[in-house]
Length: 113
Image (cartoon, rainbow, N blue to C red; front, side, top):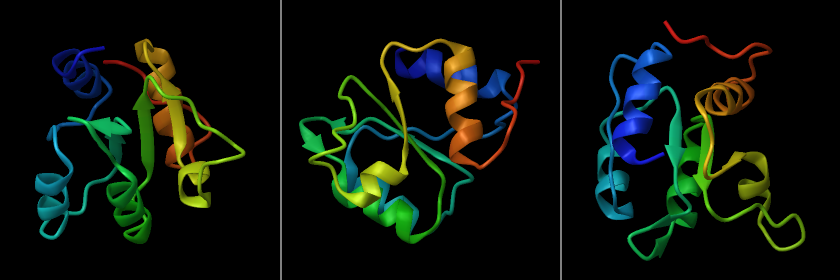
């Protein structure tokens, strides 16, 4: 999904406010002022890896879905990365809803309205 499709899908799932960033630094600055309900991030943002961002989200106890073309490496990735819900691109609405539900500790995903 491209960012616009992802935003639309999240709104259909009931998320009223969706904020997007394409770089780590502006996202980190925003997190100093706002605590989101959930974060859905790509592991690679404009050539940067998002390890610092993922660590910051974990420190704030924000449920995180990593939506990426990169898969989780159980042997090499850190505990913080292993604690995130991973969703490999491309994914459909149902897969996204399930990943969000798991990240938030819910048994059932939200359904589109």
